[in-house]
Image 1 (cartoon, helix red, strand yellow):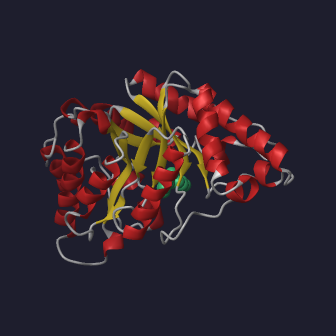
Image 2 (cartoon, helix red, strand yellow):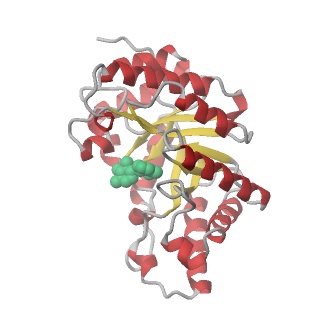
Length: 317
Ligand code: XIL
């Protein structure tokens, strides 16, 4: 077995992991997470489709439990996500299309959720996945169609800023390392938001990568993002084996990619290293494994044993 010293003690920046309430209720998960991680991101229960009820009211029961777990285990709390095209809760869809009243409900949601965790949350994914899948322009969404392609983003950041002036506010996206056009559009969007005075104060690189990503691609992506001078969050890292196809030595390539990702992050100026977050703890906890049972994208196996991936990442610290 691979011996692994506590990662959180070795990392000179917060090391994060995501969790759902079912995870924190599992004592083995809780022990392993508290040993190695110093930041927690709710995986599901701070998203709109959990919080917003059909009648438009909000529930925070599970989000509060995750926040309490973070406090008890001396982990920072990172929150995701306020505005995401993939979330269209009934409580919003059934609102009439009038821009003023829809906008009021939108502002009210952001104000309530951000305000609730003010003082504990260190940052928020304010707008998630704004760039189109293929990198050509921006996503269509309920939010864009009701409030405007650019204005709904500007508005979300402005309202979040007012609700918590201390939280770092992120634009977060994925496939930035694998689709050059998408990275390009993301960078142009950041430019545009910043020139308009929108309070984007951090950039999130989700980093759902797969084991066939060529060496160097990830490093170049973080370097490109860092040029804005803003804090960088590696916000949802996992390395899929299944999506890479059936090539040889996939586990070694996975370990090498975890090492490269950590090296690239370590190479950033200290003040830009916001946090480095894994999208799950054990393989069996992964959203990818729920999609495909053969996948094994994380640092720890189903039994909580450190994999070569964990050793690779630890080596780079
Ligand atoms: C995923 C969670 O892992 C799932 O459990 C949930 O059902 C859907 O959301 N990009 C993101 C994350 O920004 O919020 C997603 O998380 C994974 C893809």
